[in-house]
Length: 119
Length: 112
Image (tube, rainbow over all chains, first blue to last red; front, side, top):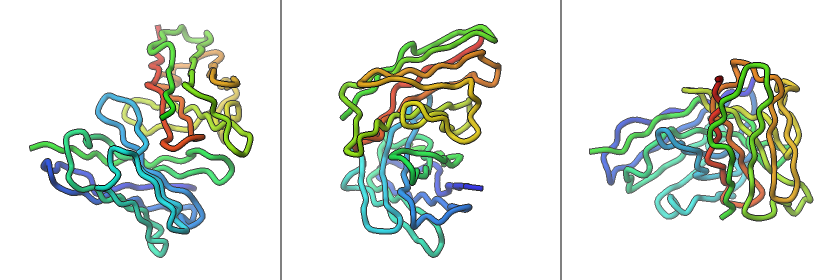
């Protein structure tokens, strides 16, 4: 069974940093594209970042490019998202999402980690 | 960026009746592999989104055949025949043809 479990959320002051982790089970991340998607409170979904966990390919939304790093640890079967210089606009639930190997899209989602950026 | 527009944004339906949600794209979603990477997700309150439809019309594993997707070009539709109480929540369309991947604003389905 595919499972994705996020951790690392919480209350963070503006200007601070966060590291989100996503532990995968039921499959090996090294063979998949993995993504982070944010959902601001009461709002829609926003793609944040992508990594091909078996290689070095990464991509970022303009809103986080230059202050964010997505990475993978295949030995731990884990994906990470580091974001610096946080603002209130970074507030939301961060979902770890697996990309399908059969089509160019998302199939499985984690339960999400809530990040609140506030003084 | 590709902009996805959904309508209606809110849809009150009667149990057992059909619901239809439209998703329109600001540009063609045909990828270099010749396929259209348009998906639909269902999100219940307090839960993560769950994949329903991928590639415009393919039902994901375990999705009831009450759900169907269709469309071409820049116009796509999700139809739910015989709406059940468990179908309430928000429906999101998403395009993964272009980067950045983008989502529609969501359509809230509620029971009358």
